[in-house]
Image 1 (tube, one colour):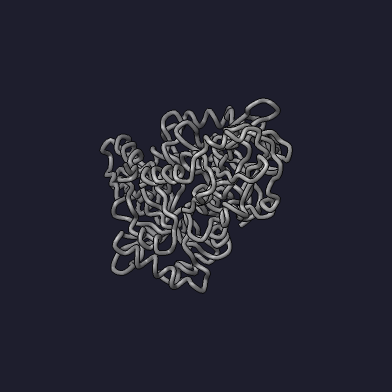
Image 2 (spheres, chains in turn purple, orange):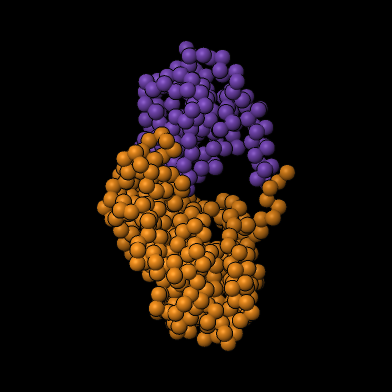
Length: 133
Length: 366
């Protein structure tokens, strides 16, 4: 299970990559896409929407289940990944790069400090693995 | 601490792992949820032939001179009076009309029935049968002796014929024969739960691995492949076949589930007959319908069904149809919104409401 070191994470399996000028990119982790299986459609907020940390902002549907996406940080949506409209399965094949979901302009970058580090997130995945035997 | 110490393996577990099956705990067993991908497996069954390990399901036998009266009383369908060699799908009800389980009765003779029940309900069913039988006939739980393989798809009967003889290719739906396989007695039945032609093979555990391998080898030119639980679920949904625990349970009756065709009111008295007669004559307050979503959003178990601002029901099953590419599902909907053509809304996690229309099943034509 891949967990890039320079990303930050949430307990609900989103990742955050810090770009420049208070902009972050959000996606779902390798673990999340593996759990969902073949992703068939997505539902994301629109450019200009305000999102609030911890609130659901979209839905990712696989053939067998649907999973909400939660905003890791509050802000305003700058951009969504248009590629996913035609080919949502990119999230399965490349969750950390091509399969990104949205970019957000963050009002308070300090919220990032409350997210999990890669090491924290790997520890969380280890615990989930144990629970599953 | 691991939470899955008690999860059992079917005798085909190693075959699934070798074939790249993604294993998950289901009804107390490690089962493959998918191999090459749900959509591709779904298509394989609709266009060629697929193999399902359904060894987790339970097998229970009723036997004895009084068994006929017992099975007629326990079930709603006419499982007793059909000819030997016939299989009958039936609910088994509580006196309230709620469904204990849905299952297939195979009539061996006028004094013996072989019954296939849902894995998750096996112990409950057996206890209910023993209690309701009250010693009138033998009730035997043979689940630990049998494995079960479903062979489903347009090429399924051809494949089964290659192993068990040409007579199998001409078998009518919902019949069964006994055959010998590697010295073991197996039951070859033309039953299944995908909407496709095909069958199910009940085989003693010791012979199932070679049966599985031989089906894969002899069906190579027919396009055979292993199929996981994911595709099993989307296949049965397209035909509006109920999944116990999702679409039916002890709080729903066969009349509400639109299973009236499985109720034979003229067969004499049976458990819940009075309740079901009343629902037939007065109508049910709700009915299990199939609907198609007109727009984006996949319905899932538990989502509210609305008309305007009013909640009129609940989704019981839903997915994206791999065959026709539209989101669809099954839901209990209050009258009169259950009529074919009714427009309803599906509330997707409070995030949005998508429009849907009640349709006549099945979603795909055979």
